[in-house]
Image (cartoon, rainbow, N blue to C red):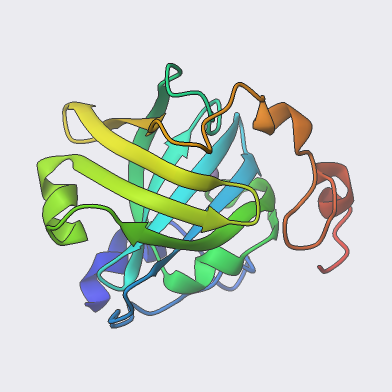
Length: 189
Ligand code: MN
């Protein structure tokens, strides 16, 4: 279990960053946890993280999520993060990996829509989940389309699909209600 986070830990100096060091956890719950963070690193992007086998499998999504099924969003697979990361909001110090402001843009739980286990779906490159977050709700698919790392995040058709540009309309943290600028000022959430 611990080996999953090796890459995550190698990239970070925990004496300098407030990000959690974390531990891989055993997951038994029928519902997993998910988090979506807005991250103003060298490039602004969103990080989508879903619980699979005790860690947060993570994808960097340059444009963030879309509620429109016709709009596929590129999602680059990144290193597994510890479960505690799903609550992280704050500043990663200059010079550290991923330096910049992190906003907890959404969080909640999800259900696997497939009969197969999530880890098997992940290996096959096709995940279908139903999200229940503060902002995102409904069925989403993550589909690998090239190599190991290039995936697409796609809203599946259901009553929660919409043309609303949620990335533009929701500019505050789902956790603290703060804007990116307010988080960047460094007051603890
Ligand atoms: Mn990131």
